[in-house]
Image (cartoon, rainbow, N blue to C red):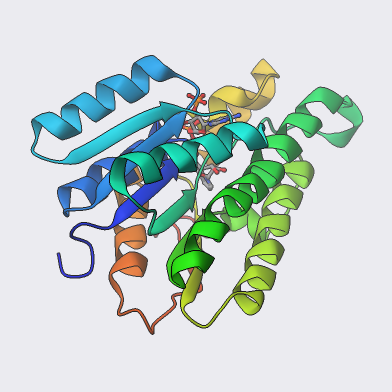
Length: 247
Ligand code: NDP
């Protein structure tokens, strides 16, 4: 695909769900992808399958809560593929709970992964983009970046934050660097696994995690944003299942 072939694309949280689908889809369109996450076995398997299908893929273990590891991730990609053209901040967790359940450790984890992880990605890739005066961030938020309901306060807060950070970044960077957020609605993935309360997990699955989009649908939205001409910056895309009406 025009504007995709040969692009070097880093994807965090690529060991499952949306990140995995993005890696497979963009590699299929001719991008050179680098997959990052903590589960190396999964990364190895997905990378191997992409390569077997003729794509170019590498992987590296990265915990996005550790800024040094994210920096190493980018340095590894530059070492292998010479540069980074697109950095996709996709890693995220969603341990939903009521505030008065006081799951403070889970609040911290959401803030560490969903906000600090994105900041670490920006801090690692922006110097590469500024050096060559081009590049694109794609930050995967959620419809929760503009919607909040019971049990989603902290998760939504992290996604509101990423939306704010992305808009600030967009205004600060040079006119040749693009910043995109993609806000998925309910999408097939392992995301609900991080809900620790079994009853809440059941409720979330039965009430909210229905009519799910295939993760590939979000990957197609990413491809749309990446393949626009360099002077077109798709700032926001919200992609819901057609049947998802209430949130
Ligand atoms: P998954 O649980 O399938 O994927 C989450 C990914 O994040 C995994 O690859 C996981 O890999 C990675 N991850 C979690 N913690 C860390 C960490 N500390 N360091 C590095 N990687 C980490 O869920 P999704 O694919 O759904 O989630 C992807 C993004 O999409 C998230 O930001 C989520 O908030 C967002 N989203 C998803 C929606 C949905 O309905 N699925 C809806 C709206 C937004 P590993 O455990 O191997 O590190």
